[in-house]
Image (cartoon, rainbow, N blue to C red):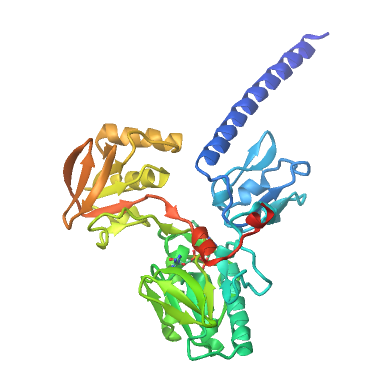
Length: 432
Ligand SMILES: Cc1cc2nc3c(=O)[nH]c(=O)nc-3n(C[C@H](O)[C@H](O)[C@H](O)COP(=O)(O)OP(=O)(O)OC[C@H]3O[C@@H](n4cnc5c(N)ncnc54)[C@H](O)[C@@H]3O)c2cc1C
């Protein structure tokens, strides 16, 4: 055997060992990411998500490169794997990019989805007269929401023609995200009488995207407006377009009105809302799936300075901010606010230690606390919110902090119990 052959052999063995080490490290990284996603519930999809045929996957990673969201698909030992299903918003770019057709994007096995309501082809739920459109029905994406809002109202119009009733409005449209907006426009186009309400303001989930976020959609037909051909918008452009169309068409949305349930009474549906009952012949629910932010339930919470999201930290400068919560969103908000000039940031969490947060966030918040950029009030509870202060119970004592803004991240109430209370049935529960 020549020296060259021996050297080549040694080189190959060394390369093999090196490759195995990289593989082990990579595998450990992804296993940690999978465990982290599971502990945060982020492994569970919100709507449609990629289904990967591992036997077909050739490990080219085209899917991970094509996905515009971060961390949905990751490579594990050369095979694509869904890690953070909750971050998938259903674009399907992964499936389009896969050269061997190993990916399909869909809702998966419906019998395993207790979060997907049973709907007829025309989007009627198991409760007669209650229709469901948009992401609440299981399918994400703005284009799907708009198409379903239109389809739901066409079905409502059909029902109203079939059943002539008394003088109540034809339909209550709940939600003013893309599905509810499209539904309201279609209702006007078809000459239906309607009432549209939203517990917040117009725009739905899109309005809550981070500032200047690039929104991707496909050309879509908006009733009374025509075809929206543009496929990329920054969030503000899209919201402005919707507001303009609503104004032109004189569509009224009753903002700040929460839907609480509906029941059938004398052949019509009487819906309870935070501003009193509304009787209509049909109800179209376009609530989305993101839920209602959980409130603290303390005096003073109704003030405008109390917010349940942080869209753009850079708009808060030179302010005294209290962030409430101990999850990743609260920590990321506190860090974002602390990075702005002149802010004084306190993080209040009712537990004595952080629990189930990303390791990276725990490191960053501890470092920010050590530098004095964020004050940690662990084991504290907000008692009341004043105009210029907040009162906390901290370690059994009362503490008053000067305050300009309170950001609450106490989780959300998902819409499913509300639907179940009305009598809507879900696929998973039927299988169980
Ligand atoms: C971070 C992020 C990025 C995304 N990016 C894209 C993208 O680039 N392209 C794309 O096509 N899709 C994207 N999506 C998905 C898209 O935003 C949703 O699929 C779409 O907004 C769903 O529309 P919707 O009308 O069904 O529900 P939503 O937009 O969620 O609107 C629901 C509305 O109902 C209201 N509501 C809820 N409960 C009640 C109640 N009880 N009473 C009264 N009102 C109520 C809410 O206040 C809200 O206004 C993204 C989603 C997220 C989270």
